[in-house]
Image (cartoon, rainbow, N blue to C red; front, top):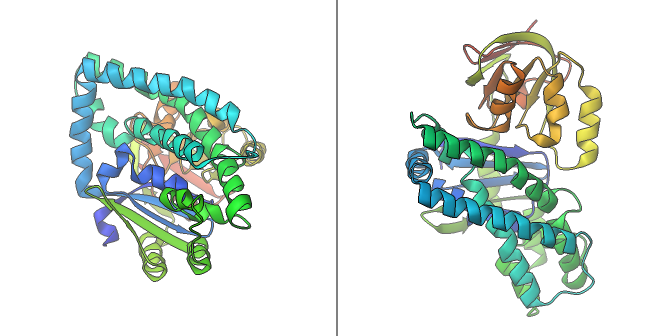
Length: 352
């Protein structure tokens, strides 16, 4: 597998559960031949680049067909309302759980990534380029609703959220420590029948794991293969200047505040204390959770997202320069660096 054939989608400095990965590998984004690589607290998702045009065409078909869009959009809205009840039910670690209950709730949780995928840039950006007012209106509705759905995702994914609580129960009941985090859904279901995983498998995945889906077939790599894939796909050459895609024009200079993907409220609050008016926000991606940081920024740089991503939309609303898909920006710059952002040309550079 050649990194040159892939496009980065998502990164986070966190240990992401294998159950969460299972949801992604079965999502609407899986058609882009997802590759997931994780090592310790370093997690990344990539798309196979040659698959992205097909998702772009699928997005045009979806957003260009009112009946199809309205049906999907209503399903998505109904799902979010039902999810609120599920979140309330699993806001603490369950005391008991049956196989049937875990099977049902985990299937329900995974459906979020099916709907949410249609609100991500592989499905949106090509449709956004079509000169059709109806398509643009539907794109805006989906992009706006995505922020509501993001609250559901956070409640699932954030520390002590629904996924953590379910896995904590399974670890306590069948395993030890936090071992359930390193098992995929079918392996978790097997626990209820007394099928325990080899300890070595858990330890290896805790260190490093990788998986991909190609044409609907999911592959979980061995520990050695995962280590090699992680090294190949995450290496980069340090640079004082990087390029991205302009999402809102303009130029700015200032102090950088680098914000990796955050997965708990405490980390977000700490980042907000670090951010001052006029600083330049450099993030994996932005979301409503860090809107206070965005409002302080004189420019926004994001490694992820498309033309309807939160960073792009908010920058246009705030009237500040924005560059998206600035890969490795959070690695090449650090908080306190003096940087210049040229969002007319899509260039971020360190001021020496």
